[in-house]
Image 1 (cartoon, rainbow, N blue to C red):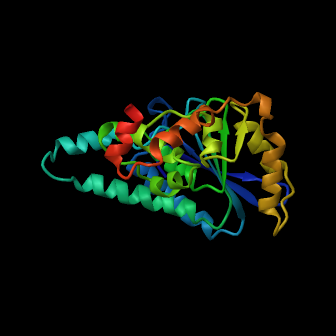
Image 2: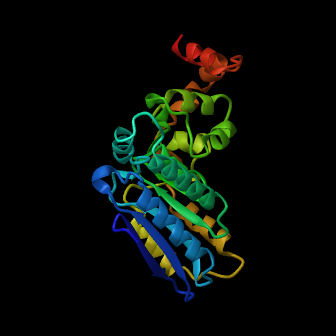
Image 3: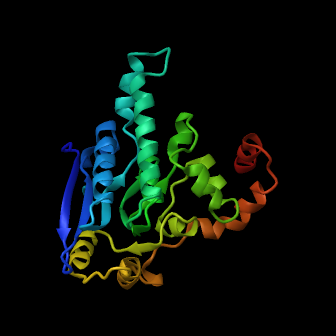
Length: 264
């Protein structure tokens, strides 16, 4: 296990445990690198078959970011040493990252993703497949890959295509920064919590008497109990502009037309 990823087990009242994975590169906004992705995959595989582990929590170190995406610095350095070809490191990173995203999407146990602060690119890949996606008032979500010439990846063609109307297409083509309410609107979150509530949430998870066959329902109830009320949440900007977005993009048949419509 790399020191860039912290792994721990939280005891619960029922005698079983909750796995906690914390991305630990706060100065780099918890950007995901190959070592971290490999370590996460290894730990999730181990906990998948461990009957003592009820569920998993994934969070980022510090309040600024859950995960700002893939570690662009390491990729840039790899490309400098092999400018005319795809470096083996790059291929290995993306294969490992996508495998990790798929594991989260298909995990048999509940996974809570604590999406506080910046959640972008590869960070959304970690968030999107979790069974319980918790955002906070400070959450900022985006797929900014488009600004460096990369298509929205990490499963974006799946989850953005399921967003209401043309909002997913808009988010993918613009890399627009979305708040927590926008995240709920496009289907990238279920609950909005208070900033820096994670320690209290972990305490509540440990204090719960989990019951076989009722874990998911109990977890739903716990999240609902602690979520922010409607008047405490930020206002959705996407909802306010949804009609204009749909009107501009609904007749577009390709990306070029969509870009022109957005810029018009």
